[in-house]
Image 1 (cartoon, rainbow, N blue to C red):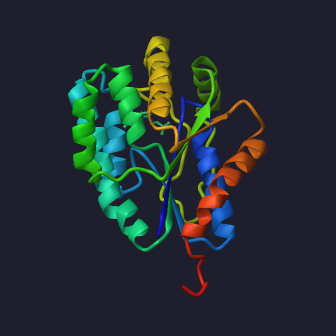
Image 2 (image 1 turned 180 degrees about the vertical axis):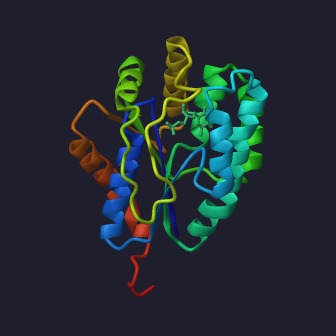
Length: 230
Ligand code: TMP
């Protein structure tokens, strides 16, 4: 068995930090684990990320944006996520397909059934076992992210990316857009409550990390530790 865990939430909620802390904790416990992000995580997907996030690309059509996120996802699933899950490991991913439904669906108003069809093509139907929603009022998150802009976070060994905070084309959308996205996430959670864990990001980083670790703990029996007899 394997375990696929994703992190979602508004901008600035600390997803990347929490994903990294969980990654380091699981690694220290000798679990086979990788950490990746969307869009990105592979050479090709990181190139697509640069195109889709570039602030200069104001002319990008919503369909192009949707297909670029999906193309980056297709490459990540096929090159990294699915092969690693097939070895019985744990994959942690900072954002995944739910971001497409929330942003391109609820945020930009793209048809949800159409997005579902595109997402199924991109992922082969692979969905997470568990998804954390780190909750924060959208204006607080955007403010946090602006403050953090320019401060370079450290990368960790074994993670497939580094995370310099960036102010990107999607952050720059207006507050109403980000509020539609947050309402979209609420709807996605309502539709699939078993998969989601909604936790407030308005607490110390270490306390939130503990809550996340507690939620993950019961699912770890699906994975064999490195060096343990199968
Ligand atoms: P982040 O790495 O700071 O979370 O930035 C990723 C941005 O891209 C964020 O604004 C959410 C957005 N996004 C989408 O709009 N659709 C998607 O499918 C994904 C994965 C991200």
